[in-house]
Image (tube, rainbow, N blue to C red; front, side, top):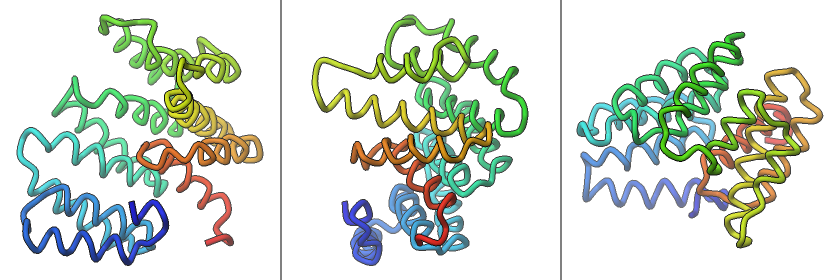
Length: 219
């Protein structure tokens, strides 16, 4: 919570206290790594994320690769991010569905959008449910539906779910616009994503990083 409020020093102190008691807990290193990255300590953050992977048991190994893949994607290190994201899916194919979205984005950024879309569609065909919110995001990323249709589909029966859906929708719309080179339009969707205040969502964190990279003078 402190990190979400910008109190990175306080967040690190809390994590260090936890890790003093549980020095081998991979999540401690994972979270500490993300906080260090937010503070600008890129090498320190990467080192902690690598340690998290080393210390993770088989059940958590996929998640720690996913977490590092997200961090590397947010840093703009597409190739390294893609390797971790694909490893996360390999280790836990049923537990890292959202990693597939970031794999699509990373591959699209490398000029492989068509092949990445085909793979995402093929994965969707293996799912029992094909008309849920996840499927709507797949439809947008693969070009089946428009940004406007995705935002319309984000509306849910309760306010919180609507905010969560809109957080995700605005991020994936912005990400595609960034890949296409439309930074001005992307910035609008990044702001809309951040305005949902869904700090615990990976999309919210990615939007914050993307906004930071678009406006480095605001650091």
